[in-house]
Image 1 (cartoon, rainbow, N blue to C red):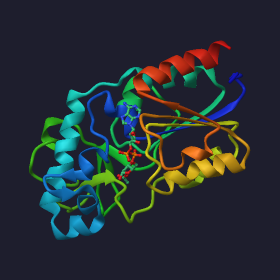
Image 2 (tube, protein in one colour; image 1 turned 135 degrees about the vertical axis):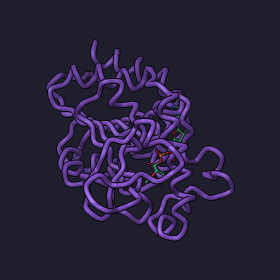
Image 3 (tube, rainbow, N blue to C red; image 1 turned 180 degrees about the vertical axis):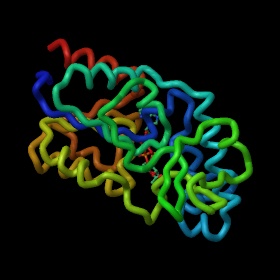
Image 4 (tube, rainbow, N blue to C red; image 1 turned 60 degrees about the vertical axis):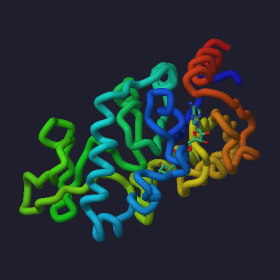
Length: 237
Ligand code: OAD
């Protein structure tokens, strides 16, 4: 594929792009954490019923961010962004590896582990200091709430900034999905929207995802190897 710098490109990433940085994908380990199904921990009902359990799960994942680094696939997407006039990176990942690599035109549709949110006053804080990463709850600095929640979109909640996402996907020339199993909607449905708008659709994944037949090109393998190689090729053809 020739990629002109005036082409509108949307990239959707999932857990697979961070796997080589050492963050487990959702469906690795059959989606189980300490005998709990991830779906049972990542819901507003779980937070209501057993906030300690949910807090412990997310504090572990938040602390893990201190031990991991962006990999060559995250870095290649930064080069792609700087080459293109119109670009949007949509990630389902809640880690901060895309922004630490240097991506700027970036939407975290499922929220961000780095941040905590007050359900009483709406305050959102970047909370990665030592005091925020302990086992005890973090209090709101703006109101009387004793227990901020992870700024994460849980199952049964609406992903963030969907209007901007639908606008960009509905107008793109090229749509690239990387490291996502295509199981979770609405993210998984973005591919068919791109396809309907006539975009050239490219998939990069270790295993063929659910919706593999919709891709015009599918590259099977490790994101850390394929993404840098393909980005270099697209920018030089
Ligand atoms: P999944 O865990 O469902 O899928 C990850 C995909 O990445 C799988 O298809 C793997 O084959 C692939 N993969 C693994 N390692 C890879 C590598 N090194 N290179 C390339 N591909 C690799 O993760 P997501 O599709 O991101 O939602 O899951 C989507 C959403 O489901 C998540 O955002 C989360 C989850 O429940 C919420 O938290 C709302």
